[in-house]
Length: 217
Ligand SMILES: O=C(O)/C=C\C(=O)CC(=O)CC(=O)O
Image (tube, rainbow, N blue to C red; front, side):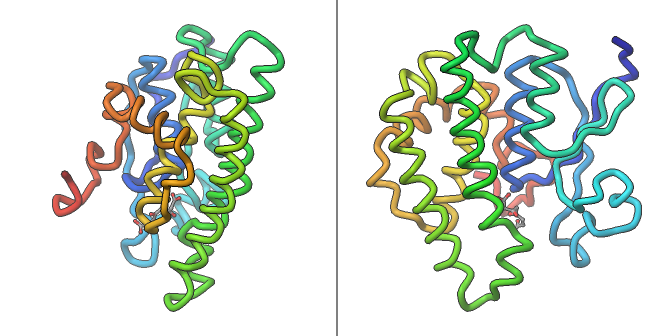
């Protein structure tokens, strides 16, 4: 495999999808540099011509690695898993692997895209909070049900997986939109389990170079 310098992650501090990839890179102990892309400055740097060459979907994350540019967080995490299998983020067992992908899909297709910035702008200022709450609550209800049969210490069994990389940032977004998380005790337990894990802490929005000082805890 050709290694052409350190990987570069196009990232935004509060983007939950960038955050998934930061966790995966940290868990696998892959050194990387961050290129911040502001999703809010001047209408969003992700929409500029230069960035559209990096990601035609005009979103973060994108990862430059091994001479390629990759987009879509799940795709990026699976590429990391396939090229750097050490510190595995997928279980060996095929049934458990399916469970991991199931939870990832529910979050990455069934929750996050409905509450991301572009959709909320389209929904409008007046309705956006109620909208985001509705879709996050509906999705987390499904996640909680799935976890009731798959979870051990983490989302699927006792090993950290790609599913945990998706869950923790989504819980942050739920809190951001004031979703009542009390109906989801397993989600909350896994969130507590991982909040102090070094790889998760280092990936947190408040630890990012582009986090505005007023947002750091
Ligand atoms: O700081 C901001 O307000 C702008 C953007 C975001 O939060 C990122 C999202 O669109 C939400 C998400 O990643 O799920």
